[in-house]
Amino acid sequence: MASSSFVTLLLISSFLSFSHIRVSEAATAPIVKGLSWTFYDSSCPKLESIIRKELKKVFDKDIAQAAGLLRLHFHDCFVQGCDASVLLDGSASGPSEKDAPPNLTLRAQAFKIIEDLRSQIEKKCGRVVSCADITAIAARDAVFLSGGPDYELPLGRRDGLNFATRNVTLDNLPAPQSNTTAILNSLATKNLMNRQGLFFSDQSLFFEKFVVAMLKMGQLNVLTGSQGEIRANCSVRNADKKKSFLTTVVEEVVEELIEM
Image (cartoon, rainbow, N blue to C red; front, side):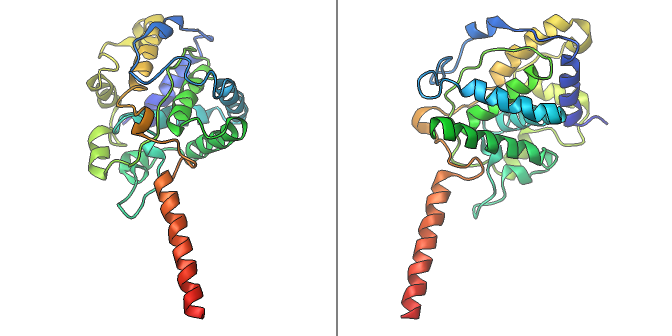
């Protein structure tokens, strides 16, 4: 039985026979209100070059990480949209999306790569880039640096304020034991790809459709503007960090009062 990681690896390996194609028509694709092709031109003009440079170093050491980043983006977008909710750790409100069965096989290193990228970007630009945008760019560069097509991305996503419940996660992702047909059908259900045999019938058509599918998927239920936040740590909501800090202060005050 083929797993979801098998399909991701199949996509990545198939790119190797198609040397660095650039799909320029992506820039004319319709985009969700709030996103922009030039979103970081002023606030972080070198954003995409920073990410690509860092990922090239990663992939030179281990190209398998490319599949991990691409799959991470899929699993984020398919559950309540591309809001980086899959990156969140669990909290008192319940287990995170990471803990749901379909996500247990996501590469731990993929999560670390995204957080490392966030840290590098913040050092150069300040906290202006969301984890959701970093994840989307990393997935695109995973494709390109594996020999696949390059294409422009609309940016401006915000990070989600909550993660999906276990049931919502299970309802929106193929089970780890799903076969290839079930996984491709799930793509079609999201209106991302049709059920035609594009893998082997027409490579140029496949890549064209693949880019369109990636652009559509990358805009599923995105948050923009004040709908979300820009996390200071991709695995923790900013509100949780504030609450944690406040709790620490209160505990210290209580300890001091007890000792008096």
